[in-house]
Image (tube, rainbow, N blue to C red; front, side):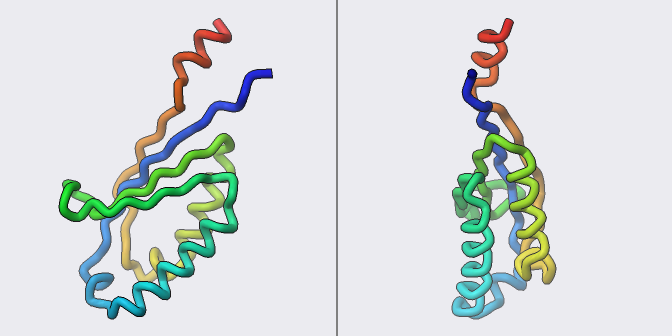
Length: 110
């Protein structure tokens, strides 16, 4: 049986100035909640990148690797209910979605 396809989402985020206006201790508290949420979704491998000095139109991006779209969706449903998004301190700008080595999976089935 072939291994499940791995999908990768690159989520582009834009943090608001109100986030930077918070004391760092308050930002750490909100970030801790985000870390707890991510830990509850072990089927999604999450990496967070700071891009303020390097990106254009976004301040951060997150990569999410997963095999089941539902696992990814459930993670973001919970994140969107958190203070980070409901205040909002951050806006989701765009998502780039791809299948890791998708051409190989296609060719192996053709």
